[in-house]
Amino acid sequence: MALRVTIAGMGLRGCQWARQIQASPAWELTACADVDPDALDGAASSIGLPRRRCFSNVADALDAHPPDVVVVATTSSDHEKTCEQTLARGLATLVEKPFTHNLAAARALVDLAEQQGAPLVVGQNLRYTRAHRTVRRLVEDGALGRVRMVACQTYRPPEHRTRLSSEPRHALWDIAVHQLDTLRHTVGEITGVMVETFNDAASGSLPAASFHAMLTFGGGARGLCSGTYESSGHEFFEGGQESYERIVGERATLHVLHRWLVLCPRGKLPRLVRRGPRPMTEEAILLGQVERALRHGEEPEASGRDNLATVAALEACTRSAQERSWVNPMELLAGA
Image (cartoon, rainbow, N blue to C red):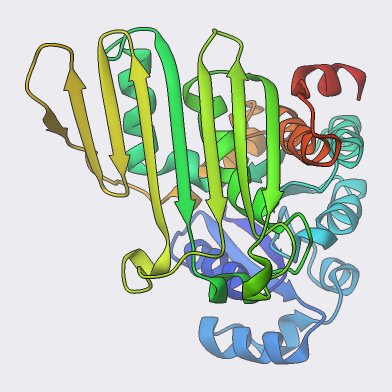
């Protein structure tokens, strides 16, 4: 029997989730909700959901068409409130990243989910792209040897920022949320951060449009991360999103530029590494984790509990930028 799904938040991301759900017989989209009537009209038209199944608030949607699963794709500032509603009803919940904007709220939601026996998954989709799955495999297989250094850089043009929240922590919580989670997934837990956030005052951009971060990892590796919404000159490359990652190991260095992975073993010629097939989308992988948790009691890899370390790293970054000092995310996590 197909699992019934309600989607909260019918912006771009909510509609993407809707199409993914409609593409599989394992799922049935039963209702959606959004505070914006124009978003509901657009969603009803684009995904073919009857307007009578589109609601202006989540509670009405849940009452009218009780689901098995709720996908929370609201603005990130509403994640906490919406997840409280769904988890209090004991409903399996898949929430977009960032999970919440503070560690205490994330911890409370994880505790609520476990009290209710409701699966909770965070949509950290980047860790399931073919590129990052390949990176993880190479690291786990020892192709690089012990990882000693990592560097991540993300560049986006200013117009990308206007499509999202004007939250002052925006660059950290919309860019670093991907970087830190994938690094946790491939290199190991982050044990220290030193961060600067800034913006080009002459550009008139919002505060914290850019950041630089130094990182330490439990295994001894060191890292550098940067991200910005003040870049230009690549608007027509990958939709304006340019990223680069370098992982330096004892045996080899791996370069990751979007779809291209180049492995440079010590003393040997560089070679391209194939990412392999994409039998399912990243969203389908995450939905599969929810399904297995519901049907078989399997602990999701991208669970809310696992994501506490990502939220702790983000909160550590925020505190570091404010205090201009090193902050250990693991200490925040232990004290949460």
